[in-house]
Length: 408
Ligand SMILES: Cc1cc2nc3c(=O)[nH]c(=O)nc-3n(C[C@H](O)[C@H](O)[C@H](O)COP(=O)(O)O)c2cc1C
Image (tube, rainbow, N blue to C red):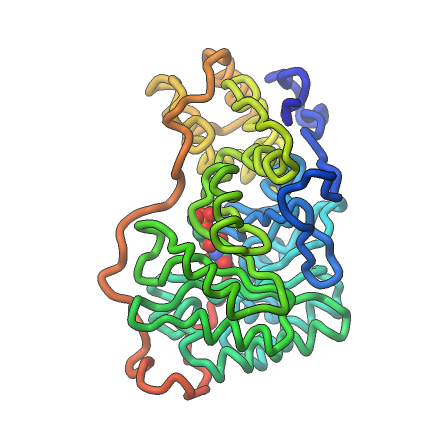
């Protein structure tokens, strides 16, 4: 069965007439399922497939698309704890959930146990989310240079204090806390075994491991053997594997090869939210849906535009869509002029006109399979605060590592 709406959406449909929801998957595993249900605290997640938090991408509109195609859990863009406590308007605006979104997953970034604890208390008291994921994987130099993101788990006691503060505050409302991390800083400074053990002891509901070090950034390939190793270390809570799932078969291979309890999918669904329908089918033991030709791809792009306009307002919504354009159209014969104009589209009417110029019967191109999204080169070295590696047990809060705004 196609996960796309039966009829290609009318490209000229007004916003109020948006395309019907694609495919709401039953949240229970059918008989013949190829994995167990994933328990994140009290939440039963099926399929065991998580939309990875991606700054600038996983806003409410994109999460809704991914959910409708079949993602089991869908994490909001990263929110920084200090900005949250300050009530930063841009940050508060990012904490937006669709009424049907359940559980509401919020990712927090913080480096100070006191600030993280207060932020989680605020989330709980104001009922802002049902699940909190803590980000310890960010590799960008502006963050690691200050000791934040993927640099932080190296400081074991500080890491433990942050996670404890979050779990303690969240437990008052039975909100599960999870941790997302990388393998470590570089091959000589591997942090995930200790961090996994500590997080488990602190009472988190699951740990997710992106199989890269910070120095790799998004280059090379993810080392799934680290996920298998983490699964041996962390035994009482689910371990989620992350990195380089670009097809449903990758997810099954990761589960089989590592024993992980669920997968986290990031770049593979950029411009391809229907990957979650393919993942759901694979986990349910159903035949893979046929890859879409350009008509349903254009329909999904159009629906994404409508959702963004509804979420952010018309002008911001259309502008935000532009970054998704190349991903949706990857490998299709579009022509340089239309491709360029789509990249600068400024209204839904213009979008419809441009999509109307495409040959919508084109089959899904082979070139659009496989890796997509950010890749780039490894970093030459991971920038860290002076003396950061001297003492893993020093627990001073790094200065200036709290970001003021979201993103990263
Ligand atoms: C554009 C972009 C933004 C990201 N933002 C975040 C983030 O805010 N928080 C986070 O934990 N990871 C973030 N990540 C990392 C992803 O969640 C994921 O760990 C990484 O992309 C590896 O998974 P993949 O190979 O499936 O893409 C981001 C990745 C990308 C490409």
